[in-house]
Image (cartoon, rainbow, N blue to C red; front, side, top):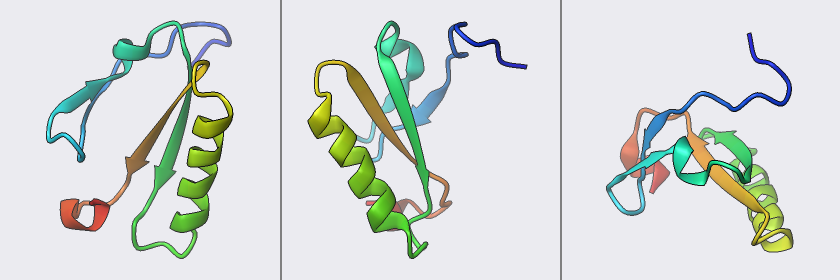
Amino acid sequence: MATVGAAAPDFLAPNMITSGTFRLRQVRGKAVLLVFYNPSSPTTAAVLAYGQKMTDAYPKDLTVLALSVSGDPDAVR
């Protein structure tokens, strides 16, 4: 169970843009918004637009991570 104010557990995710990986601990100490989306969902454009809006509004204070829940890497790109 998560504890309010406690650090989130680290995780490793593939970075579909750089073909590398991303670890949550890379942004330790910053506010992070995790945006989960499915590329085939009709709400994807709105969800990703919201993430971009938050990135634009808080570029120095917030890290937005968009995490695809699709098993199709080509759909994510």
